[in-house]
Amino acid sequence: MTLKIKTIKGEIEVLTGLHIGGNKDTLEIGGMDNPVIKDPATNYPYIPGSSLKGKLRSLLEWYTGKAPQNNGRPCSCGRCIVCRLFGSTSDNAKHPTALIVRDCFLTEATLKKISEENLSYLEDKVENSIDRIRGKATNPRHTERVVPGVKFSFELSFKVFKNENEKDFMDAIATALALLEKDYLGGNGSRGYGRIKFHNLTIDGGRFDIEIKQLQSN
Ligand SMILES: [Zn+2]
Image: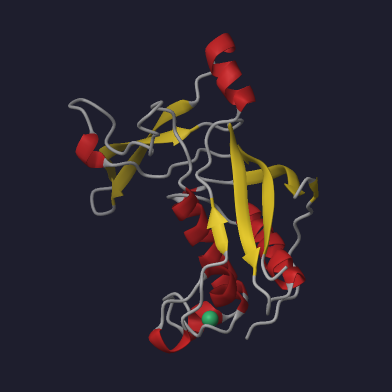
């Protein structure tokens, strides 16, 4: 078999208020200044796979030293573990994207708590910006956040091409997920927003442990 597809599944638990910005164009009058993104089909918050994937890529680029080399722009060398896993669009080193990260929706258990126990899953966090000259708080800003304890389902798959080593990809993903637990998801991480934890991770049904590992940087 020349191509294998591996799937990692689990749950993401929100540990501190999570804000992934929604579309302000659809904001109703009198609504939140800064709403979280919601699934138009259900109006429940979700984590877009694209933003999770972008965050994982960026963490791995910092970890492997690619980000400073590229002044923070995505690497496009086409050879490093980040390019091999996440894809590269540069003309001289096109590399297919091996990794697909699915949108993360609320878990069944969280939905049940919402419907049966009236769990409130969103909060309105008011942040004051301080006028440093007058020392007064001005323009309180309302930011919507998903509250701690809410869980989202998580799923990603990756293709292992014939010339690739499956273990390299698994190590890179285990590292990226472990780095994310030490970092944050969404906005305002420096103010303590967006800490998360993974639970019950499996790879093709077997247990998958996350851990920061030594990776080849080139
Ligand atoms: Zn690269």
